Image 1 (cartoon, helix red, strand yellow):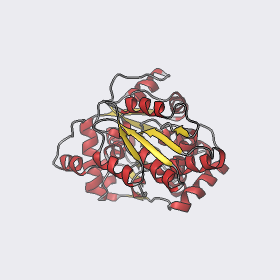
Image 2: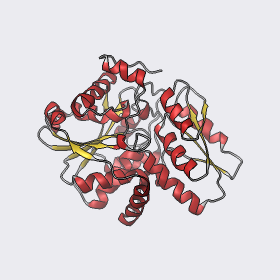
Image 3: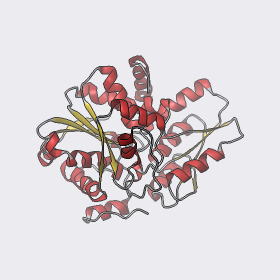
Length: 325
């Protein structure tokens, strides 16, 4: 994934026309609980409650400049990518159709509709929804299919990495969730542009471990299922470009259990009073799994989103681990 510091600066200026930088706070209680000096990057503070909106703004800006004939965007999501396109697309006067799988988060579906998207329910998981979305864009030049992994999306979400490293250049390691890979690839690219020694560690669910298997194998490896309540990382067919970037720039990919992610959601709320959706908490679960390695060191955790359904959050706060829909 290639872009320059000038590209990043332009993307950051574009994003900051709509929203300011998100905070990256050191939380003493969280640091005490983990045994490391922990900084949390609060992407849950963005207008759609998640980091993906940055990518949508950059994608739509280039589309309007270079492909003005496009009038409708079509994509698939488990929630935050769809909210990003709905937020940026409708503001630019575009129609937006988002395909979600059966059992998707009702709250995220409602949020996308409120942002102006037409939400279509199709398929048993994200990959099935993605394949259907691609067919909806076929045969009409005014309709564009938007993959969850695209250079403009990566450049957009990379702006959070620029903000993080501007505030905390001393981080030994940053833990980040991995779904289709835009967030970790943006983080790797910015780390490399700045010449920093920071290790980047991706975190996935043990029940959706296609990316971990791909990283171990050295090439994309698909799985038959991605049956996890951590919907933001429920990938079973990794993107080849994302895998290549991770292989060249990530230190490792850590797979954590469903129970560990639920506990990380509770820990985040208890120590920072921030609600994390499952994929927003899984980076902290990865750090907790490596607490011995991280002991005493300055580390970052990317809280990518806070869009947790009320029913799911109630289940987690009751001490239970949700069962995938």
